[in-house]
Image (tube, rainbow, N blue to C red; front, side, top):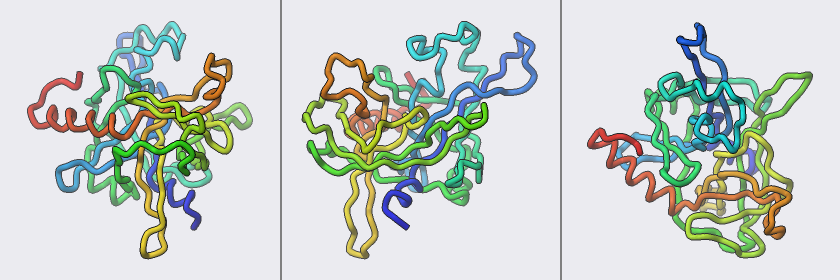
Length: 256
């Protein structure tokens, strides 16, 4: 199995579903979907699932979503699930997630949790090591995610991995870095991990997540050196966020 295929073991499909009883809805319908990846929590056996808040709360991202009906959707109308996908895009397992979502106050980043961590592991979910180290310009990276593919007027998510590197321009911010990939990341890959990789002593590739894909820099960006690149939230930003999430889990306070 190639390194890229092994990297896909750490990336899954995040789904949000909605039902508005006061609008006459009796069943849940698809709200949004993209990618997500699990990391180990500080408590033994616990996992955090990282993804983009525009998937869990699209009604708060009116710059992304312009559908007028979203104004009627509230958090209490939404539930969440994680799908473990086969290479074909077919669903192998679907796992329910706890309704409580922890959103970052500034970035398109959120943390969710499985109803049963042990059941998630039994279903093939494998957490990845989260690293606070920012990649160097030109450093080799792997981007994993679930691309939304349209075929015969239907859409499905298909696992993809793309090789790339840290931005050749070296442009970073305090909280983000940019990465160029072999081809532009597509819809559905937001929320996936940006991974560094090294060969272990056993000859197997060891992966660590150095960031999360937050979005793609538009082709018409004023900074043309970054056009088409992946904008990634740094691992150090995620580490700090999860530290606060774990404190909130302990004391039972609100996410934001």
